[in-house]
Length: 171
Length: 171
Image 1 (tube, one colour):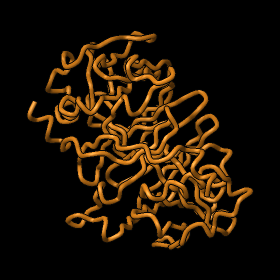
Image 2 (image 1 turned 180 degrees about the vertical axis):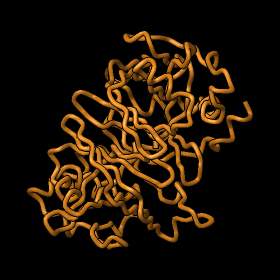
Image 3 (image 1 turned 45 degrees about the vertical axis):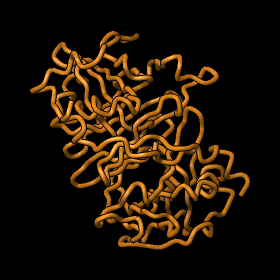
């Protein structure tokens, strides 16, 4: 699963939560979906500001990322943990230290037992210049953290195995 | 993103689709969510049988996995591509060649523009014995494929970076 840091302003302050239950759910327009336990402090901020950010930490940020997943904003002020920046919506903090930031406007909330699915439309994507290859984000340069729930470990991305929508044609 | 092969019986025959838009959306009971374009042949089979499987291919299966993403079951019979097996529900084919198989009962379908979100409850998980470590699936032994949409590549999993819910305590 991808390792992300979800940014939201909660009760007027930036807050950050480590989330692996995040993926894309529509291509055009581009939507992302995150599943958050209702116990999280972050949920109220997403409802309040109708927006959230998905930030992709590099492997060098494992410690800070894990910290965001362990300590709740209800008890721990995480607002100074990162250098926040604001984009088009002005309502949702993004993490400057992350090589890739995705700014989302909340579209819909779906209730799933004790979780909420937040579906957001991607309004803008911000990437560090040195993580681009031919003008597009490059996975190897971003060097993201992969999360495994089975063994509760963060992994680095390994070697490229094969090009998608291509290697299968040679079968 | 994770690379999965979604199994479903469509018009009486096993069919397989490569899907990266897949994640967990509830912990207890455990639910998974997959987002499929409405153009896919697979969707009708999930509706018909109210079930689907999520199969995790190893890195050695990149070619077959990509094949499942390139060729639609509407035109290409993929029923013999893998050795299918059936689990508790008896309605959804799983891929014997994959080290990990997740059998899901369909709970809910959510309409998102030109995609459908299929939310399924995990009924059973099947894992190859040689992919277990202390009785649990081990990410390194499964050797999954990681998909990057930015550069359209399949990657292997890299080295373990840090233990989750642990490294952040040392901050």
